[in-house]
Length: 491
Image (cartoon, rainbow, N blue to C red; front, side, top):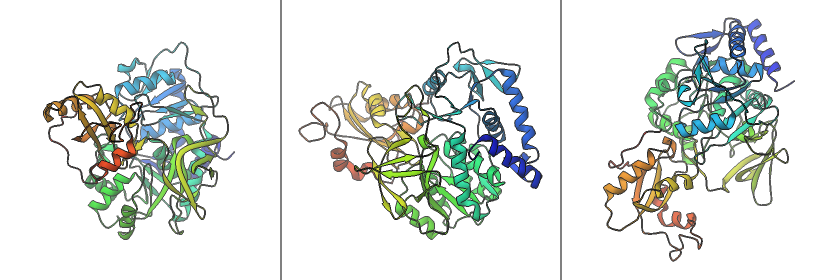
């Protein structure tokens, strides 16, 4: 059956027969060939069974081990829960409790109640009454957290593999032989596009540790180190978020010669950046997707004129309702963790769009949530709540749409409070936030009131009015961090 683990594993078996010595997985020091891959997966299946695991956190860095454990979990239809490295301690505890995890693979499990087992890779904990999951759940992908408690999106085994087959059909004419995973594999987009797609094609998934790619936390990136990795692995394809593309294009105006396909998604891509990249021969193809739809929904195709975020993949139906909202059907979620199943197969994305021919063009979002340039979803009210919990801060507005660093307008609790006191309070708020949600630049502001139309009668910020008044600074692409902010460390 298309999209099933059985069909996927059968495809891998054919590769093992037809090209046994070709590397399936590589990290720069080690490789696993297609002939070796089935035995490596089987060995991990036996270890999972011996540990008695059912719901397993995968908290490793990018690498061959991450891929092999993921494939073993997929093979047995055990519940896999990739853990983003940028999640705070509070968010990790929420993930463990809400998903009812009984096993943890990777560092950090002891602090969350997991105990060592005879298998040094697997820590476990006893779960007496695990929370109910939607029937068929094979993977729970947690959002980057629009608030303090990120939502878990429940997917069956078929949805990610169906998307992988759709992407593979798009790139197959390019004869992709090597893909370099530039994003963490805990990101659903890279998990599918950087692991399942190359394996489906019989290509090599190159999986070095994220630090070797230039990542510094969730929101820092060294493009020169990334370019060195691209030179070393000579990949034919990459997946990037806009900020990574911006950094790479700035550092290397001419695209590396090996590249044939660079998919960009996760956040809004500025037209000027897209034009610049294409002028410099970066083979950029913009796409669009959501975790609730098993990642990729639309993608521009090689050999076709670039329009918006491209045409829907073959398995997907997309429609736009009378209010302009985009709805998607096909490979959608089983439901959010702890919430009722969707009433229908159609998912309301919250995004606004229109058609240009068969291509979807996005126009913004109905919700207030912004997406940073690193593809992290942030509910500004969450961050504003942490700021306003500090005694010296009366009001705050946070903005980070398509920016590498978040900005805030700060209204002090008293006019005579100096900047050093406000900076200390912002640093204190930052210390309890994951790094993608922290404030890096701030300005004092006059109070937001109903008299200046920046506050509703019931006390809610009028964001459009505030953005109209302060948009030049809030949306500025130039970053000048304030030296008086000492950032805290995620708990």
